[in-house]
Image (spheres, rainbow, N blue to C red):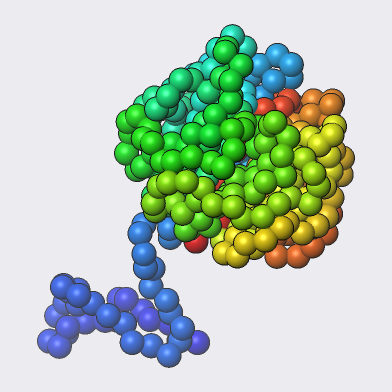
Length: 337
C-alpha cells in the first residue's frame, strides 16, 4: 500500500500546493469510496430509544441502546411528563412519540426527539382527533402513520389512521382507515413502501397494510398464527417483520414473522424467554429488539433476534427502569430502506 503525502503535492511550478475547486473526482483502483447520500445517512446511526412505562407508577424516563452491541441502556433524557402506552416511529434523525396516557387522560400532544443527541422532548403538534393512546405507529423516511387507538376517558376504540410529515411540525392529518375498530396492536412496522398493522383489541388475528405514500383504506394482508393477539410488539428490517409476544390469552412468548412485500399468514419464528405484553420494540437491518413489558411482573429486560434467521431471543441487557406500555423507535429501522 502506498501513502499519499500531502506535503509532497505541489502545483506545476512547485511553488505551492494544489487548489481543489469546482467538481473534484478521484480515480483509483485501491477501493477508496467517497461518502454519498444525505449527511444524516453517512454513519453515526444505530440507536434504539425507549420511552416511558408504568411500573405501575408511571415514569417519564427515556433511555437508549446501540442496537449492534449488547449491554444495558443509557439515560437519554426525560419526557415532559410521566406517561405510557406510547406509539413510536422515526426517520433517520428524528424520533416521534405519539400520545400516551398519564394516568388520568390521554395526552394529545405529539413530541419529537433528535435521536443522535440526548435530552428532552420537543413539541411537534397535536393529534387530528380526540386524544387517544394504545396506538400503533409506523414510518418510512418521510411519513409517520398512526392507528389512533383507544380513548381511555370515554372507553372507545377507532379504525382511524392519521399521518405526519416527519421533517416538519404541526397537527397530524387524515390518512384513511383500518379494516377494523381496534387498539392495543399485536405489532406494527414498515418497509419503505408499506406499513403493517397486526392484531389488537378486541382480540383479533387480522393483519392489514397500507401504502405509506398514499392514503385510504387498509388492505387485508393475512392472519396471525393464533386466533387472537393484542398488546404485542413489532419490529422489522426492510424485508421481514416480527410480531413479538402479546396477550392471547395471557402473556405470550410466541414470535412470528411475515415477508412485508408479499401477502399471507404469519409464520412461526421462535420464542421470547418469557411471555411478554406491552413492551417496546425497535430494529436495525439485522436485529429486532424488545424492551420492558409485563409477564405480568413488570420487567426491564431487553432481548433481541437476528431478523434474517429463525430462533429464540438472546439477552441484550436491561432498561434503566422497568414497566409496561413502553414506546420505542430507532434511526435504522426497516422503513428507512
